[in-house]
Image (cartoon, rainbow, N blue to C red):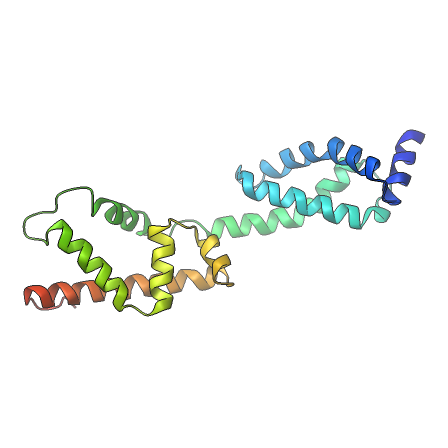
Length: 195
């Protein structure tokens, strides 16, 4: 027990070797604990593990070995970041119809379209023109989501906003794109625009 207390004393003094030993003894177990609780999302688990280890080093003087083991304390520190990540991950679930839109987008250039619709090259031209006619913020979010295949979290990060802000923006952008695409197709074929 005295060797554990000696290690803790060195750790509290900022001894680099003690920190390395502490990290090696605790990082893998903490990662496994977090990974199992964040839907086995390796990137999120890695981020939370790093965050908790940094927090633990900053607060190492609060650790009381008489109240429990180091791994238990680290897991307790991880609980709030895990809960936050779980909420975020549940918000990132695909929006209804989003998967179908992804498939249509991907299929647009890979299969022949029915004869009553526009030719493939013309469709691509219409898509490009419709995108160009949209406001910048709509064009950016659509390209991020459907061309770059970015997640809602990635888009939110790019725009310095939250997922709850990106979702309605993406919805409005899709609606604006649909309306503009239909308008352009109608103009080219002198057809009435669908309501």
